[in-house]
Amino acid sequence: MSLLSRMMGTPETIEIPYPPQSLEGLAVRWLQWAASIHANRSAIDDTTGQFAHLNQPEDVWFLAGCFGGRVSRTCTIPPNTKIFLPAVNEWFDVAYQDIYGTPDVSKLYGSLSVDGIAVELDEIFIQNFIPIKGVWGNPVNESAREHPFAIYGLWKLLEPLARGEHEIIIRGGGNDNFEMMIEYQITVAG
Image (cartoon, rainbow, N blue to C red):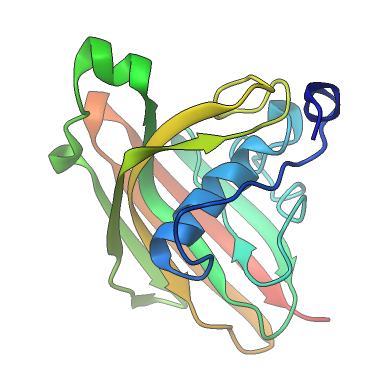
């Protein structure tokens, strides 16, 4: 795909060195998804859920975290669709690592509940740098150029939810006094 296409907001498909349905593969795909949308329509910066549907893949539904604070979002998800989300995550590039070293991920924490039931999270740390291609102005690196990232986070792949209304609450925090809470009111319908 051309640089011009990525500048205009067309999502990029990348090859990843993990099976696409593995936790590592999903984390890379999630970051690529986050980079595939300009910041003014990004699910990460979204305060209502109005952009949650943008560029969703066919085989899984990605939910976004936020850059801090408290957010309430509403969205509709198709039935029989798994959900993948970070409770907290960091991505960092080679330049960051060269200057600051590997981030201290031991300070990160997160929690997840679905319909009031706590759900255990999975730790994913991809230390090799994976090239991510975004659109111009994306919230990951703001660039339409390929950029390599390492990824860390506490994530969860949820099995499809039953049709109807659900509440997903995500909490996370860690480095530099970062804290966030997201309440998703989800309808499974379609």
